[in-house]
Image (cartoon, rainbow over all chains, first blue to last red; front, side, top):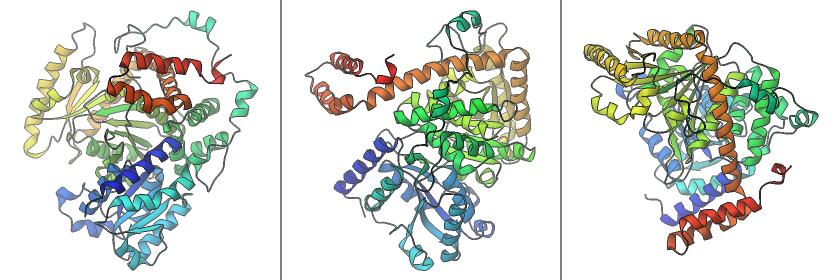
Length: 164
Length: 389
């Protein structure tokens, strides 16, 4: 599905407004979580190890096209490592595109470590399948294949309220 | 700091002899702060930096950073990266506060790492960083990634290639978007480096993509400039501007493993003789050219030794102090350039009429020269009150 031009325009406008107000662009970490990155990574071809998951790339590009600064996590990232990357990059949002293992446990763990690091104001969003599986409260839910613009339009008011 | 030679006739690496006497008579010595400045450190950090959950003063933030809190280090970097004029003021205050609290240890080793895309800079930094941490160092990596000039956004994917380093508590990796004007990133990166050093990181690696002006800016803030390249990169080397080769203090031909090892050695030899031609000044130090493999780890520490040797050489010859003195001077000018530009762009009267000026210039009703003059006049008539003594 393609982003409708009008929706992209709207999202870009909101993002630009935020950037002028906040002194920086909204920043998101696009991550793929796993409960056990060693065993998961054995299934990944060596040349792909340093690469992001294809869905991660699509979502990351979608955010960047709308004016976000996008951090991309390595494949099969442990929740505490994703939290660390989110904190180090001082992102506003973590967007989860995939969770290997028990979704509920991993997402809850991510939230927990963010909180422990003094970063419970970082928003967490995830795909609908992760949301369904995990049962953990999320700040927003999106479908892979849906326009990122609609997710951005949904998210920005809360990001602005917290950080602008 | 777009052009390091802008404010003097000093060439890169040339001896710098500051006229200290003259400076001291006219410029107020540093380190002395009056009561109003001490008061300034007690103001709360702007809410957009700290988020809703926390409130603290600039002085408290400085202490948290020095205690090693990652969250606060990250937020302090956000503060120094901000383009808002009021955030800039707080960023200066934070840096003053660090200065007042004094250094946390010996001066950090500051290294710029560059190379064409695909040369393996990130994996090189990953492998080297892990070894440095094993030796007991704390390593900060500041990576500057290009922003899209179309959407303004950026994809900061380096960390996917720094998987080993990213899991260490003694590493701090912060990719930053280059933004769309270079002065901004140069200033922000330099200040982020100071923040990382205040947090106790004793090795700071600044990674840039070797295709443009950001290298010149980074060379203006590090002790040693390391170029990562590849064998059979003849055509790629042409992509590296000669200016970047000139700036290199150490060169490593990367991916020197397996079938590529012999070719890498040949490439290193050729580069070495090429560098002699480039640095034709009689007393110029010819950069060390080495081979390394991020994959096997062979040669990495030799590269690091060469970096330290270069730094040692600078120190022995008094060059390190001079280099840092020149950098301080250039920093002053880049602060002035940047503040002027940010203030101009954020001035309401300029912002309100920006679209109008742009439209008139684009339609040809107003020449670019006339428009620039008018914008500057607007600026002149509306300079911030705090600047008028």
